[in-house]
Image 1 (tube, rainbow, N blue to C red):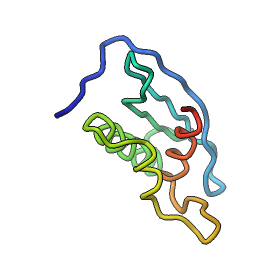
Image 2: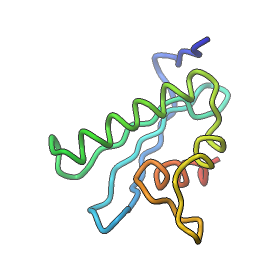
Image 3: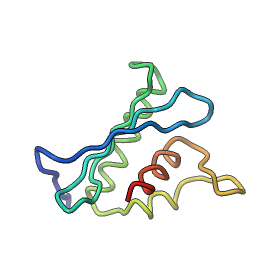
Image 4: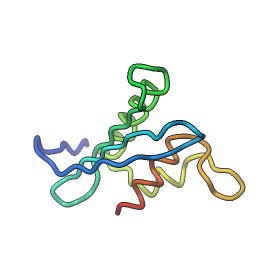
Length: 101
């Protein structure tokens, strides 16, 4: 069952760098409990391919969180290199968000 967020909620915005791209802007919204329930990601160049991909990725992460998946489970399931670094933007964003908790 989906856990809806209230209309007004606490949000935080920060930047995440990945793969020599300009930093992506990430905003997270929280439930009254403090748990993160939504994620927005955008590229500095709006309406470009990376911007669209980042925004769609954030929608999927948000839906998973609202249906009960945990940030830790999502972060651990991302593709990583031999040193444990994320191989894609989703992993970099999730790692940064996990660091907020």
